[in-house]
Length: 227
Image 1 (tube, rainbow, N blue to C red):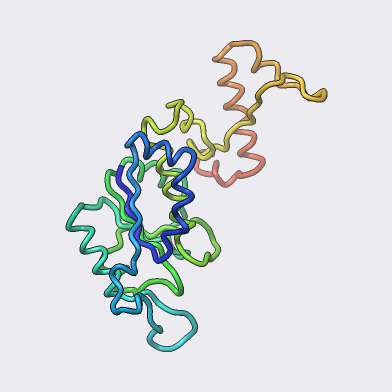
Image 2 (image 1 turned 30 degrees about the vertical axis):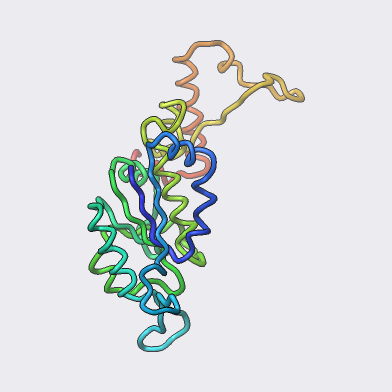
C-alpha cells in the first residue's frame, strides 16, 4: 500500500512512522509512506500557502493554487483510490472505515491547517472527508497519523500474528475482552481459570461473552443494530 500525505508540517509525522509497527511495515515493504511539504508548491518566495478568508473573520485559509498544484503533480505519478481530507466536520473515523481503506492500494491524505482549506479544493478533488473526533486540533497531521496507523496494521503481514487484528476492539462492533499474562497469581489476583485449562473452544466462548458484556457496560450504542 502507498500512502502519500500533503502537509505544511512534515516534521510532526516523522516520528509516528519511524517506530514500532509502522516502521516494521515499511521495512517489510508492505507500506510505503511519503510526506510532501506543501510549501514546495508555494505561490511565492516567501513559501506562502495560506491567505485571509473572503468575508473577513479570524484565521487563515489554505489556498487553492498550492494544493491543486500538489495534487495534480502527484496524480500524474500515481492514480489514487481515495483523496482524503482530515477535517473536524468529516465523517467519524471508525474500524469499519479503517477496514475498507486497508483494502486500497494508493491513498492521498491532505492535512488541514489554520482555518482549513479553500472549499473549491474540497469540491473538486476530495473523495472522502474524515474526522477522528468532535474536537479541533492545530492541524490534520496528528489525525492523519491515527488514520495511517489504524489502516497500516490491518495490511496482511504487518502484524506478526495474522489473527491479532481480528480480535481488536470494534471488530464486529464489540470492545475487546480482558487480557492477562504471567504471573497467573499477582498479589492474590488470579487469572480466570478457564484461560489456564487449554480448551481453546471454551476460551473463545468466554472471550466472546466477556467482550459482549464489556460492550454492554461501556458502549451499548455499538450493539443497537444487533438488538
